[in-house]
Length: 219
Figure 1 (cartoon, rainbow, N blue to C red):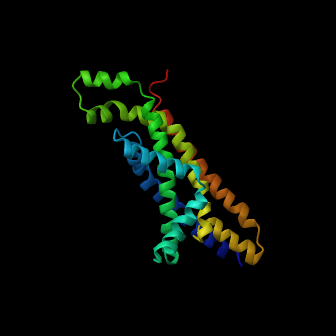
Figure 2 (cartoon, rainbow, N blue to C red):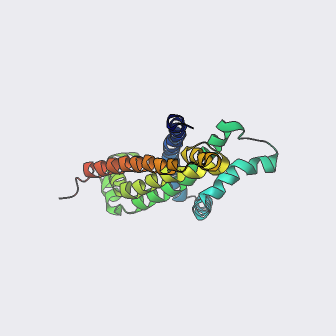
Figure 3 (cartoon, helix red, strand yellow):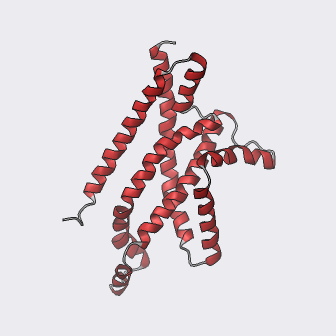
């Protein structure tokens, strides 16, 4: 197999990796907010259920969650929800979104609870509604406080996309594995290392730039 053909297949697999990464962020970031509001809700039953769900997701491996999402619906209800290549990708996306939404929700909650209560009281004295208080006073402080832990989770997500290969999603690691097993070609393994190093390096620079932009509290 020529270098050009191997390179083309690896690039195709890397495209699937990037798509899984981007879609996971697009859906898990807002879903994490919803889960966070459920975990701090004053309605006790909802709060207990939400926190129990987060505990289960955070306490079990992502690989196990991939198997559950992909296989369990068919085993229990005899309905194949995720058929074909697109179905496998969708199953991986669902598992990733649920997993990372739970992790993001805890980061959101920690950031929100770290903001002094006095700021809420001051906004209330000024006659601001809860909505105005959140968007005008709290939100940017929250973003600044959670940026560092969020950057760690996002970078972890880049590497976790390789787990999608366990349900035969043709991301870059799965493509590389086929070369190793069928063609006994080892060099693509180092080749994809460069892909991930560049990807993570770009994200690191992006988050460093954002941290500098939000460092207006620092002297």
